[in-house]
Image (cartoon, rainbow, N blue to C red; front, side):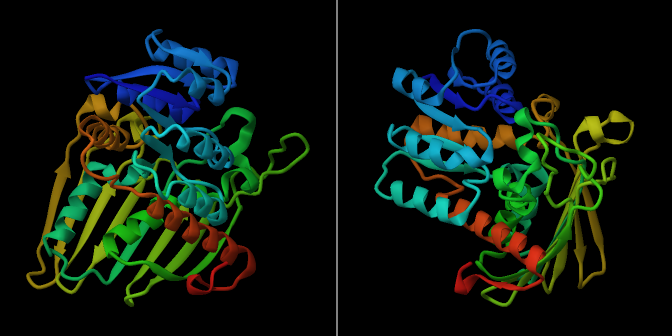
Length: 365
């Protein structure tokens, strides 16, 4: 059985979706919609020439050529595109963030409330091999009940996108929504709890400070510390730096409990790695009782690594979404509610960074 995908948004991330779907037997790109001529041409060639190309997603939907849809348009278009695609009754994989505001996320949830076909929010970082291993260790009780989670991402600046849309808060939701929704999702997943309070300190200090687009200067945060308190009394911290390309580890996710600390260490993409070579990821378990440290390399298939910039996670997520669509059994692993929460926390962090106030999520925004 072949699952025919419709790709809405065929820019940089859309093309990563094409490369990863090409690795799954039984998946094909039947159609794609992309208004930018160059991106549309390149994506059509990457899809193998068998796909129909459209300039507008509504034309693609009207053609009804597809069994499932992937949405990878700019963030500020997700809300409107999602409402159109929800009406098809077909399965949907929507790139993060679900929308740029929690208000828009809630409307999407309301419109999808009685929908039978699955909607999956693309939170790729869950599916990195070292993160999956960390989650398995937590489920096995290696750390004991998790009490703290710390995530450090020191990485390269935002890449250029069509129309420079990712340089402005009004289009992205802000860095702590656009980029960091992954991390709020990971925190909720690891701690098995919902946030109640967010405090952030951040600014745009290095990246894009001399750039101007159509007379407007970028306003996106490029570094921040964020503290997240959870309902059960646990806490998380994010250390973000967007001008640290070439760091030995792009992400380090650490979860600590009374028994041990478990670290997932993830390198950056090969093109930003020292020497241009992507090193293997690691999982490190530091046992509090025995004082022993266990270090294990976590290997990934080079074909999967080469299909994108997300350490193989885009492939693994697609594999699970594909199986869900093909079998018709099960539910999305990343729900619309998860997508809402990841935007809520990022939205609160952006507000906190700009006002200096801690934001209580129990009181709303």
